[in-house]
Length: 176
Image (cartoon, rainbow, N blue to C red; front, side, top):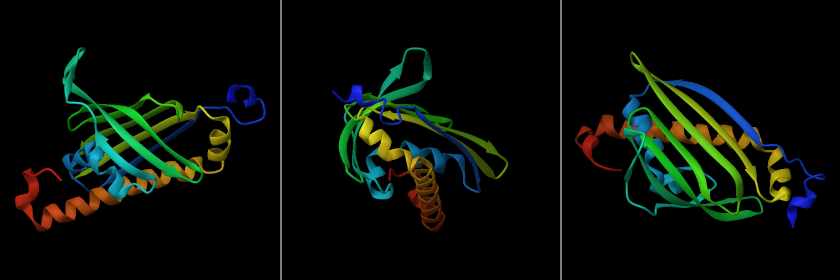
């Protein structure tokens, strides 16, 4: 139904990339990004977040594991839930791909972490396209704001967790 309206609305895939250097240990950055069940606590548009499958290995690599999560987002007029396949490569990378989504035609989020001396380089990229051309059109005004805000909130959460771990080092091995 909405596909016929694509000629009226912007139907391009939105791509955003950014890199940040943070004075944080790589494990704090990785653990924050991999902590999907707590996204709703620190990401402004995420209202619910939980794992819906057990961990399983990925065939092509013994180092990578995958899980499915369900996320509910609420932004402007949009309130939708979708399943995301999350691929985790401990201490190195996190990739989230919308797997079962009425909301997104495409959603691919990538995080890569590289440790350099006492800092961590975070490479972040996101590309998405809504199935609903009206949502896609709505988002064009906010694309960079959405991506920047998401990245900023992740980094702020990393700093909060690092401060907590520095204050209470016995929590280092506890799940947050």
